[in-house]
Structures are given as structure tokens and as C-alpha cells.
Amino acid sequence: MMRILFLMSLVLACTFQSFAQTGKITGTVVDENGETMPGVSVYIKGQPKSITTDIDGKFSLALPAGTYTLVFKFVSYKEIPSSEIIVKLNESAPLSVSMIPQDDSALTEKHLKRESLK
Image 1: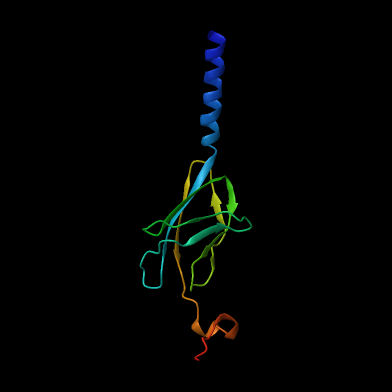
Image 2: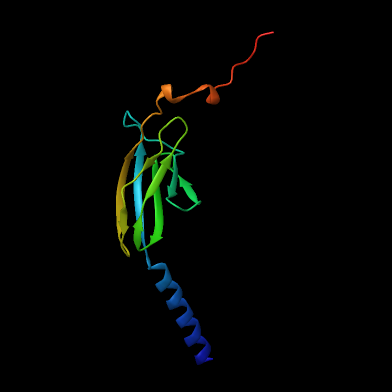
């Protein structure tokens, strides 16, 4: 019985230890007027998985220690890559991002579809 309790304690300790091996990148995304932007896609460069900002334009990523570049995407705004962010164990790296509207002149015929009148 004592051996089982010891093993269960050991498993729990290892589980808690593995959770402590991360840091965080947190931040807020705003538009050109300083208004928060909900629904912005936040990607880690080179990885397909993404998260989106919440209703207040905030995001939080728990990541293993290392160096990361985030990419921010939203319809009709330019894709914004961050500079390299260093994530340290048990620390939070704050980030503030300002999105830039897509230049309307960048639209071409390929992007526009005109309805024909009959």
C-alpha cells in the first residue's frame, strides 16, 4: 500500500513539474485607431496551429522556453510578423501589436468579381 502511494505521489510530482516547464507570450492587438481587435489570428511562424484574440483583443500562448516569431493576420489588414520573442521558463513576455489596414490599391482584377447586369 505504501509503495502505491509513493508511486502515485511521484507521478503527480512529475506531472506538476512538466507544467512548470513553460513560459508565456501575452499581448493585445489593436487597429490603426487604437481600438482592440477581436478575432485576429495569431500564428507561431513555421507552425500551422493558431489561436485568435478574445473579445478584448488579448491573446496568451503557453510555450516551452525558446525563441519565437509570431504572425498576426486579419481580413483586410496586412500580415504583421513580430520580432523574435524570447520565452523564459515561468515568465511572461508581453507584446503589443498594431495592425495596419491593407492598401486598397493592392486589390487587382484577380481579387474583384464584377456582377454582370442582364
